Amino acid sequence: MGANEVMAIILALLIIIPGCIGAGDGTNGDGAGGAGDGAGGGELITLVVWSTFEADSLEDEVFLDAIATFDAQHPSIAIDVSNRPFMQAADSFRVAAQGGEAPDLMRFASDQLGQVGAMRVDGFPLLEDLRPHLTPIQRNIYDAQALSSMRVGGDLLALPASFDCVSLIYNADIFAAEGVEPPNANWSWQQMLEAADALSHGNQVGLSVPLKDPYRWLAFQRGFGGELFAANGVPTLDSNGSAAALEAWLALDQSNGGMVPTGTSIDTMKNHFREREAAMIIDGPWNWATYSQARINVAQAPLPMVNSSGERISPMVTYKGWSVSKQSLHKEEAVELALWLSSPEVQKQFALETWTLPTAVSVQSDSEVIDDPVLSGFLGQAEYGFPAPTTREMSMVWDPLSAAIEQVYAGKMSAEEALSKANQQLLEEIDG
Image (tube, rainbow, N blue to C red; front, side):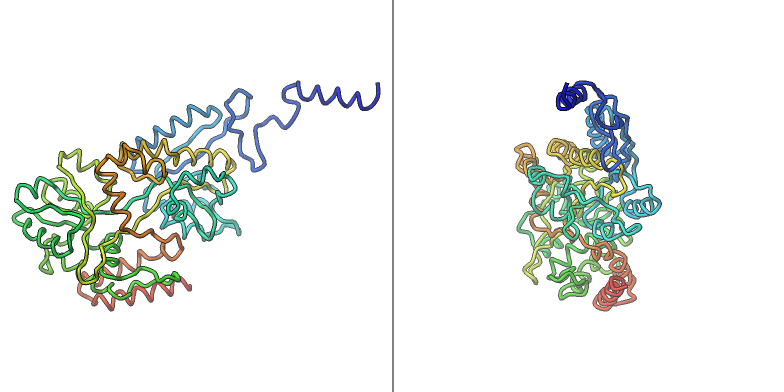
């Protein structure tokens, strides 16, 4: 028998005898365990997932249902899920990554990604660039702005699963009972104030908002003609119109002659509305279920126009998506899970069950979503909003801005002085 014939027989045996090719441990080049279907005897791998949904919330339930579906379809993958408080999650991830213990998958907001994307451990980034893992068809699932909001320096650091913004929410029964015209898309800031004043009496307030919350104030900055950042990305907390916006915002406090009870926090605002003590609030879709469960006739309208500037009060739109850790030993499986958690199927379930706003183009145009007044209302409000910049600078805004609002609220500085100081502090921190 010739050498060529011997070689042909050997190759044939290698093809038909199972287990002769490869190490047989189900691993790929990056150390990840094979996803498989369990039939080939591949070892079980574990994906560690950090969720930032509030534990035991409706969103958490839908999320865990999606995890269970994926788990049932991938018997060779075990999923270890734990909750992290949203506000501390980015710092928790950074600390874990520095110790080499980052989770495989985590949910980030777009205004956090700039900071996390700039971090390095031993010279390596903390998050995986997802572009090489996706096909053009997979990228085209999401609307262009959502995908752009997950990019840092060109790298795609998360798959956008949802977005949100605040809007004007009101108790329709209070307006009807007192014969006051309810909010509409053509309302002005002055009309809103007049309605709020007419509905403020006894224990009832016409408007309840957390005046020290910088996130909500940013909508007013835009409405009064201000800008958070210039076109070149330089912070402009003290831009033209910003001081007027802060003065008008804090004038809502009862101590300044307004109707908002002094010391109102986010939780206070929620309680005012839930207990029918507030006619209007500024809030997002994430609390709609809470208000509905309280059997309140909840309605919504876009934030009003400011006549002096000709601009609409415009909320910041933030996106949330699933990121894969650079340290993950199972990147391909983690990407597969991220694709599932941000898939149209899961997004539609979130939208219809929790009023979470979808980023998938097919879900945004779905008839069930369009016909839902809550979802369509917030989708309409978002069209008047502006996307949170996905930059390191954006993640650094909150502390200086909060301090500025506090200084003006306490009467220690003028709005113009406090915002100028905050902007200078922010510039120094960026350069430092």
